[in-house]
Amino acid sequence: MQGLLLGMDLCDDYSQVSCFNPLAMEAEAITLSTAESSCLIPTVICKKKQEDVWFIGEEAYRRALFGEGTMVDKLVKLARKDGSATIEGVRYSAEDLLGRYVAMLLEKARAKYRLEEIDSLVFTVQTLEASFLDRLIRVAERCGVPRELVHILNHTESFVYYVISQKQEVWANAACMFDLTEDGLHYYEMRMIRGRKPKIVEAKHERMEEGFSLDLLDNASGEHLGDTILTACAERLLEKKVVSSVFLTGKGFLSTDWAPNFIQTICNKRRAFAGQHVFASGAAYIAYDVLQEKTSYPFVCLCEGRIASTVSLMARYQGRNEKVILAEAGTNWYEARSRVELIPDGTDCLELSIAACGIPRSDKVRIDLSEFPVRPNKTTRIEVIVSFTSEDCMTVRVIDQGFGDLFPASGRVLRKDFYLS
Image (tube, rainbow, N blue to C red; front, top):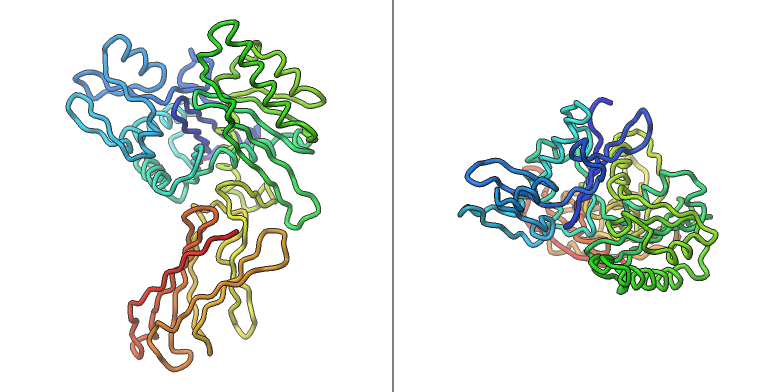
């Protein structure tokens, strides 16, 4: 192993870290100490009174409980809303606190494997929001991990890559997962669509109304009620579906003894797996894969957070008509950025093609260039920049670059937003 290949799952209640081991070709969960058996690390931080000393996880809880420091929890939620916390009269931004927490997790990984370098770091979070993702990138940079080594997935994507990394019989048909946490009950489902080129994996995520507080499981009657709720939910979700395997994750499934009827339901002609490292390990598999010349996942993943259509334009290059791909279906929208320079030839319109994955027909969208200065043909150079603010909202900027000293750039910028269906 040259450097660490890490996947980090950040949630409001617990976070997890996994490291990909290239020798074993699998992801390994990391705990904070040899005394801890759980890879669930509370997402809390505590500052020791009157000292610049910080603690995270269970140790942070313990220090705060004994009055030795001030604790801040729900660090992810705080960072999403760009909040802050005041400790001993000093205001700390949420980004600062989350940065300290992440830095200490990375130090634990470095210490365990006795490696200082981090070759790849993949965060996974419940949902992707541009402002929060920008903060995560800055957090990584603050921890000494350059932006180009950082990727961010949502939980649905991490679930897909974790499952696909298992033996094929696990995902031969559909695979699904129940995630039971303090945040509620979440359901994930994925299936491979056969007969398409390229291969397509469709996945979905749904936050279930049947979710309940884990405090319900503190007594026998509450456990029975929880079992009844989950059993009804599983019967509804799995009815008439061919499902190869069912995964269980989240603090609520640290033990499954309280839900015998639910377990019996999901195990009916299906394989079932319970574990706490699905999202972090799925991210760790990608941390390794992004560094390889050839991916181990030759398919298009269509789910929330991924672009469902390919965006392209036709241009003439070295005497031939060429299709220029500006955004490819299955790409994480946050990382889907491209730019290209063009010289319009006999047209004052830029035409883009939008093709849904696996469908030969494409739609056309046009951007009027007549607002740019009028010049002789082939004496205007334009820069086209494509980016996304979500998986279905594309922003196209066209910048007038002029044509050298003869026709200076006007500085005009055309911006158009398109919604991809």
